[in-house]
Structure formats: C-alpha cells, structure tokens
Amino acid sequence: MEPSLVDLTRRLAAGDPTARAELAQHPGEMARALDEIVTVLERRTALLAETEQYFDALAQQSLVGIYVAARDRLLYVNETIASMLGYRTDEIVGMGILDVIHPEDLPTVARNFERRFRGETFRASFRIVRKDGGIVLVESDGRRVLRRGEPVVIGSVAVLDTLKRGRTEERRQRQALFRSERMAALGELLGGLAHELDNPLTGAALQAKTLEEMAGPGPVAERAHKMAEQAERAGQIVRRFAALVHDYPQERSQVSLNDVVREVADLFDYTLQRGKIDVVLELSGLLPSIWADAHRLHELLAHLIANAVQAMRGRRPPRRLAIHTLAIPETKHVALEVSDTGPGVSAEARARLFEPFFTTKPPGVGTGLGLFVCLEIAREHRGSIALVERPGRGATFRVELPERAPDLG
Image (tube, helix red, strand yellow):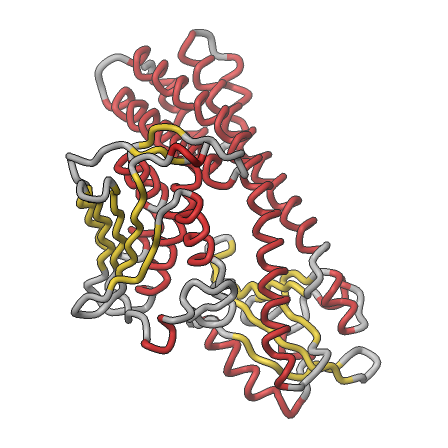
C-alpha cells in the first residue's frame, strides 16, 4: 500500500475528520475500499444512536420509575419518577440522588447506594420527599453498569401502595410480570437490531477481505485478515442472538444436541471470559440426533448457562462451567448436563425450583421464570429436567430428551 494511503488509514483510525474528505479525492481501488469500510462504520454508529432512542422510548413508557445515576448526580430519569417527585425531568437531572431522600432515611440510603456501586444488587424501601413537601414510600432496586467507561447505577423505583406483609407476594409477582413484559419488548427490539447489524457486518467482512487481497503480503494484509475474521465472528454471534430472541413457530426437525451446545456456548463466550469462568465441553461423539425444535433448545440451554453464571458470580476461583452430553441407549434418550461450581441449591429451595416466580437469586437479578421455562420446553419435547445431587459444591441440572417423538407433530 502506498505511503499516503497508509497515513490516511492511520488518521481515519484516529478519528481525524479531514481524512475522509482527502480519501474521497484519492484515486485507486484501495481508496474506494477504505471509503466503503468507513461508510459501514458510520452506519453502525447511526444504529447505536437509534438504539439509545429506542431504550429511552421504552423507559418513558415504563410503569415504574427508571433512573441512571453517577455518584454525584442523576444522569437520567423517566417521566414516572418525575411524577412521583412532583418535578419536571429537566429539574431532576443533575440533582444528587440523595437530595430527594427523607432526612431520617438518608444514612441508610447513602450506604445502600455505595453498596450498589460495589456491584451488590438488592431491593430496599425508603421515603422520598416531593417538591411540595409530601412524603412518599418507595421501593427501589438497581445495579452497577458501565456508561461510556464510567460506573453508574441503573435502577427502578416503585411506589409502595401498602405495607401489609400479606401483599408482599402479590407485589413481587406483579413486578416480575412487569420485568417479563419489558424483557419481551427488549427481545423484539434487539432481534430487529441484530437483523439490522448483520448486513453491515457482512459488508465489513467482505471489504476487509478485499483490502487483504489488494494489499499483498505484509502487515496491512495481516491486519485486514484479522478485521475480516472478527467481523465474521461478530456476524455469527448476531445471527445466533437473533435466532435466540425471536419467537419462532414450533418447527421440529433432526437436531444435533452437540451443535446446539457449541452455538449457545459461543454466544456466551464474552460473558464467560469476563466472569473468568472456565468452560469444559464434554460432548459425546456417539450422540444420535433428536427430533426437536432447535430454537427452543437454544433457549433452554441459554437459561441454564445464565443461571450457572449468576450462581458463580462473586465466588472465589476456580469457577467452572461444564456441559456434558451422553446417549442413553436403553431408553432411546439423550441427556444434557450443565454443572457449575456455585454455592449449590439449599434443601429448602429444591422442592420449589421449577415453580414460576420462585427464585433464589437476590432481588433485581432474576424473575424466577428461567427454570420454569426450561421445564416447559423439556415437557414440550416429552422430556424431563431435574436437579442432580452430586458430592461437592455447585449444582448440576440434567435434561433428558427422547431421540424421536412422532406424536408431537
């Protein structure tokens, strides 16, 4: 590649706004290929801006208050919180989160806020003071996330309409349903975004391959090859994610359970690496195919892996996720086992594990629907799921599915 194009490429990577105009004036196929890659990246940036608009629209329609807070100020609130406090949203944004707390509850809320910044998730109730001086009892949860590289807390706030203990379960189920509805809406949104991202990623991969061919042997070609590989990998993840979140009609066919395991494990690759969790896949080479809905099996395994990751969060190493498949010739079934090195399941919780809305996770972490959904999917396939008791710490869930069930249609 000629020196002037190398210099332009470096300036483009550094975000130099004048480099794009100079590139447009540069002759040759290489310059046009670079220009097309920049166009793809600009489109992806526009898609990210669209995503922020979508999430804002979802938050503004929420039945509960939603906020984003830095340590020293509120960065975002929806209209529901503004209504609770009697302010306009523009009056609240920029205020300290503790500025609206009742003086008697201030020390506890301040400590809880610091706990959230340390990564703890829990639900707590306290009093807030409205602009007109009125007192409102609320319940809030939240969690630490990164926003533009800085830690913030994103959470929800709901007004407590009763303090009677008899209403606690009803309120918990109602909130779980709200979360479930929000997740369904987010699934639709993210499924559409995954589809929109697939085309630019495919284009970026093709352009990177073109760059590699045109550059000839050397460091530029090596970088272009790595760009193509990463774009292709991102495209595969996007396509698998789209398959996971879409509500497809039931379609059964011959399915390789081992392929399902590999695809879902690949989907969780970043999450597992970030959690420093070692993954062990023990997949039987003699496993027969099964008559199943591949999309539903993806969903089942995704729930089991997500549960395992949450169970090991905050635990000391070693953290290990093991997925094992095996054939059961005597019953013409196949089995899938997912094991973790978390704290295990208490004797009290075992009897209720598959009940809807029952959860052993801290408040705000789960809805209590994951294992219930797994049970429903296993039953749809005339199979079963159970907690397997094994010596040592951790939990193992075993799913058994028939090789073929002709009566399912």
